[in-house]
Image 1 (tube, rainbow, N blue to C red):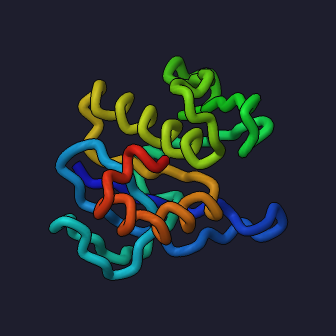
Image 2 (cartoon, rainbow, N blue to C red):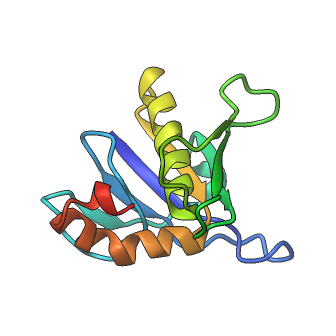
Length: 150
């Protein structure tokens, strides 16, 4: 499976998209925007795409009210297009409720939906600040039981 990760537009008046990254994956996995790093033999390549010509596009979003506090409650959204039956919004599962977990879970849900439908290529558009943070922390997570730290 090949996953294309794009950044969302920088501003509403500027509809240009940042350069997306292409990540070859064989299983559902955490992803983000990386630059020429090799993590556990996953190939990561810089690719330039025009969003209009990149095939199937899905938008994901995760958020957490009271992030960082005991009363935090998160939710996720996956948007495939107008009136698409795959569109969803769900409560974030699990005890640890954080913004980053919500963003990750939203992307994972989109990947799960794609896998269930045998979709082989997909472009996920997600919050750029979260995707950058994922990349900054990904190496450490993979080295030290990263699932427990999210």
